[in-house]
Amino acid sequence: MKRIILSVVAIVAMTCAGKVYAQKNPMVGGAAMYATKDIVDNAVNSKDHTTLVAAVKAAGLVETLKGKGPFTVFAPTNAAFDKLPAGTVNSLLKPENKATLTKVLTYHVVAGKMDAQTIAKAIKAGGGKAELTTVEGGKLWAWMDGKKLVLKDEKGGMSTVTIADVMQKNGVIHVVDTVLMPK
Image (cartoon, rainbow, N blue to C red; front, side, top):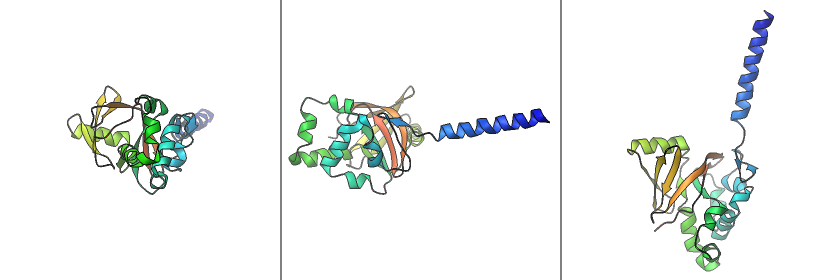
């Protein structure tokens, strides 16, 4: 009887430990991301997304991305912005380029909450490729390269999702390694 009780306790402990682990908040840019926070409130804590946060502020999109949503955001890292030609980011952050900056940023957003499983289903339904319409009005194409989710922009640029399914209270973030560019 003692063995049975100890076995049940061990199974319950392992089950509970698994649930705690499954609920752990993913780390992005050295900070825990919380599903109870919105996209902006999480992004400001990521040391890998300081350029993105500065751009969102300069474009006046903070209130939008703090809104109800839901949004799917393909969030470029600082290293992704560093891949752009020299001076591009500084130029985009100037007040006179706000419309262009807004266009680039909203090209990284898809309406709705598309986690990796939803995107994978769209890819399967599309025969290996999914076409996503961005909030900016442009198109992105998604497919799998082995286990990696790859995106192609309207200019032919490619970006890989490096961290998927960072859940937010108003959507989901997928971290990407390259800035996506609209036409």
